Image (cartoon, rainbow, N blue to C red; front, side, top):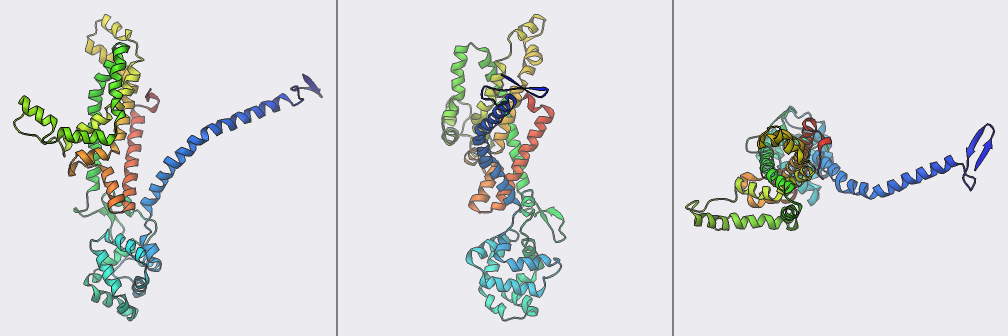
Length: 420
């Protein structure tokens, strides 16, 4: 019905409420309902993805061991300029807190100092056991007292390590993950050669990921093309074989390659029987074994995106190219393959990013020189309990993934990404 108010007509519903108000209410309820449906997914992303990344970022820049274990010492050492030896009052405060420090706080702080100079933890423990002797000394006698307990206290480098660890927030772990550190002038320099391992590991991770992606592409392209061009009845059966590895545990697939590739394994036995070589070959605990196992596991992630795109390509395009005189290989490269690029790009990006974070397969099948960044993340966060360095390595790996994604977006374009 229509009600007239002044010179304006107002549309009303049967209950007398203006129609525009009804529409606003309906629109508001639609938005609330949409938010309600999206909320569980958003909550899952926050809890399972965003918060862990924020936690990693915070762990990589936090250095709380000394500031929590020896708060007064940390405060006084921050005021020291780092030249020569710290003020006697700072040494005296350090001696006092050594004497009263709890076991847990003392252990974490000593372990943190040991990261910079091997053996520092033992020296701090030795000094703590004799801290009562230091308590009897005046501040001016404190340095001589420390040196009497252990002559290494006469080296300013040890006191500088305490100063460097006295700030709660630091770039120490992030620099360490790139084989860098700050010298006494606070300039960024390279670490000693015996500690410089993480850049090599990062380059190795990129190398292995690139090689696995290339092998998956070379093997996956003909498989996807075959699946897309065969009759549906046959291609569906072959597609099941491609998906079959997903039904088996990753650990089982990796350990099965250990059985097949070992010196007395099936592959070596078959090759010896066929006369391909005269003695068992080392096919495992090396880069070859890593490539074989990782390509086997990641190949479906390359095949499926390419197959989904190839299935939508009109076969008459190839026939038209042939009718115009193009050879089969040229028609494939000029006509068919460019249409496959969304699937190729999606598969390449997916396989490369998955390869960057692989841990189980290289750890079981590869040798010491084949371990990737993820291995060292697990080592630092598990065996050595160095959470700061493990988090920093994780951040570096995350940044590398983002860089690769932006490179992909720059040269290929996210809008061409297609996985179904």
